[in-house]
Amino acid sequence: EVQLVESGGGLVQPGRSLKLSCAASGFTFSNYYMAWVRQAPKKGLEWVATISTSGSRTYYPDSVKGRFTISRDNAKSSLYLQMNSLKSEDTATYYCARERTSFDYWGQGVMVTVSS
Amino acid sequence: IQLTQSPSLLSASVGDRVTLSCKGSQNINNYLAWYQQKLGEAPKLLIYNTNSLQTGIPSRFSGSGSGTDYTLTISSLQPEDVATYFCYQYNNGWTFGGGTKLELK
Image 1 (spheres, one colour):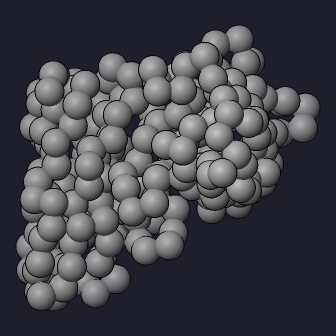
Image 2 (cartoon, rainbow over the protein chains, first blue to last red):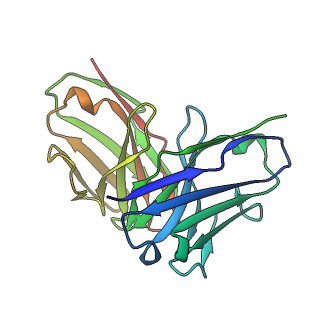
């Protein structure tokens, strides 16, 4: 059974950093692109980052480019999102997702609140 | 590519045939998926590549479309289908639509 479990969320002040983790199991992690998708409270979904199978290629929307960094450790079947210079508009539930033509499996999400 | 979903809110009765629309600002080349999100849950993939049903999804869900216009159809609405539905394109970047909230009349 495919499982994705996020961790590392919490309350953080504007301008500070936070690192999210996603532990994957039930599939061969190194064979799949992986991504982070977020959802602000009572809002729609926003793609945040994608990483290739080896980690050599990463992709970001303009809203987080230069501030967020996606990475992976295939030996540990783990995905990460380093978030720097956080803003109030980054407040959201962050989901880890597996990519296969589309996001076919999602974690349960982790909440990040950016507030002073 | 921007995605516009309509309507934003849809009320329907159990057993109704329901149609949700998603329109792209550019050609999506059939790289279009649909997600269902129930309150407090993560999104669930229903349809990918316009009309391919994800494993385990009931056959009352179907997708169609081409170019810039795509549709999700529920052939006979069930109470458990109450949710918000998002379309998503992966032809050029990765973009979600704003969602259609489906409620029971």
